[in-house]
Image 1: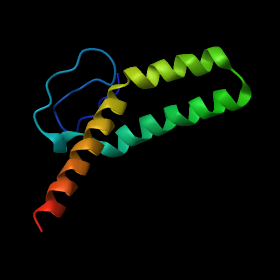
Image 2: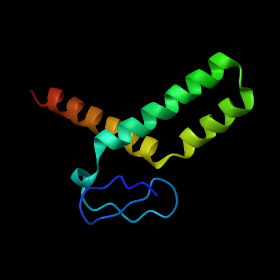
Image 3: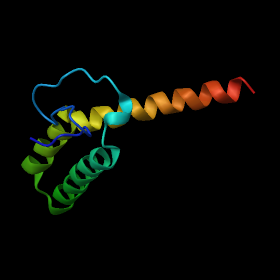
Image 4: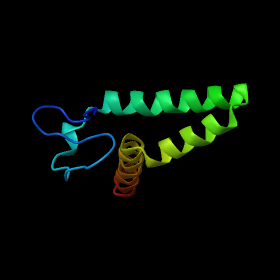
Length: 88
């Protein structure tokens, strides 16, 4: 299994996940690469008309822990920016 966490802490991409204690432990470069590769594979499958492969990859992306981490990060960073602009 691929780990998305730096150092001794271990969180699996798929399968059982331990509670995340520090947001900065995440290897964001690896997370972005996993999600980007999945998106490219989805695009390629659509382009080639591989419908079963396309659907399988879409489901995989939806269940992907890396995709979840990126989504939560985007939302929290966006909320943080909104709070900063309101306080000015």
